[in-house]
Structure formats: structure tokens, C-alpha cells
Length: 237
Image (cartoon, rainbow, N blue to C red; front, top):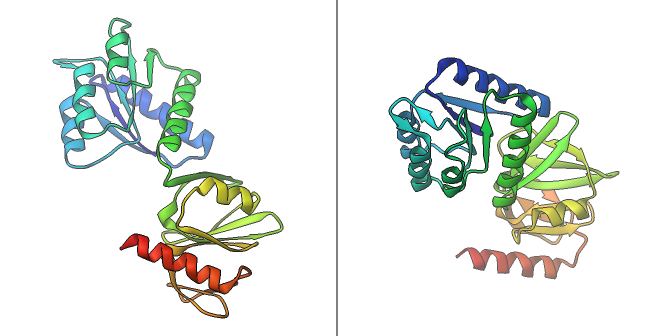
């Protein structure tokens, strides 16, 4: 999760940064936290195509108004979750006018922050169908569907093979995982395999050949598998 924190008070900025990082450790989530001491610095960063999943804003920041900053942010990003963290209740209605997710009063504690972060992550996951959320013994992950080459199941343990990192294993039925992916690029070619057709090189009589050179077993009718793959390729043209 990419998180931005904007506050012109160094002590408050550091406190919120520490709370967010502690939340990430408790939830075993990878958090990239960027801190800004002015709204202009944050806006400049976002104008350079840098995006954030969650943005924390103070309302009063010297000569800057956090609500106006939020309105400017919405020009660059309509999806990020904006959370106001401030000493003042006076701008709560304006805050929701810029589609703020939460309005938290200082001094912040972990309980209030955790509730807001949980809600923000839930919203982000719901907004982005190209991401699937999984939980393992090592922690929680948001996996890009683009990153999945294929998933295999054995004894109710699914192993996802990814382009950008090592394989990840977790407990779940492959039927359930297939439903949660909700994407036409995935082909259930076997009771134990779910393949991302973006990574299929060809379909032979013996199985599916991936662009990695691996061959995946096929238990459905080969002609049917070829038909599905051909339709997928045509849809991408």
C-alpha cells in the first residue's frame, strides 16, 4: 500500500507516520509511506503521476487548507482514499464533499487509525477488480491479476506462480479462488490448474504451453480449450 501523509507540524507528521507503519506491521502489510510538510509538495508529487492508495491530510497547514488540497488531489486521482486527521471539527461537511473516507480527530490513537485503514483497504480492494487479496501465514497480499501466470492446487493448498516475485502458497479451494479472480483471461483447464491466458504461448495436444516454457496439464476437451484461447486472442486484437 502506498500511503501519503501531509501535515505541517513535524511532531504530528512523525506520530502519524509511526502509527501507519505500526499498523502495517500488525497486519503484516507492506506499507510505503511518503511524508509531506505542505499540500503544495503533495500536489506536485501527484502531478508527476505518482499515485497513492491512501492520503492523510490535516485541515489547517499554515497558509494551506487541507480541503482545498483534497479538491486539487481529486483532479489527479479520483480513487485514492482521503482521510482527514485534524484538531478541528469545523470542516467535516466540506471533507465529505471531496469524498473523504474518514474524518479523524487528533490526538490519534491506534484504534481509530486501524479502523480507518481497514476501511480504506477494503474500499481499495473493492474498487480494483484487477487485484485479488489473499492471506497466508506470512501476511496479507494484494496480488495484481496481471502478475499471475497460473495457480495450482494440491490438498487444498493453492500456489500462485507470479511474474514479479516468488510463488505464494495459501489455504483455499481453487474453485473459490477462481470465482474471486472474476476475469475472463483465466482458463480453468484442469481441476488443479487455473491459467492466465495472457501467458499462454500455445495449446498442444499434450497440454498448455506457457511463455515461460512450462507445460500445464489439461483435463477439459482440448478442442474446447483451443476455442476458448482463440476467442480470448481475438478479443485482444
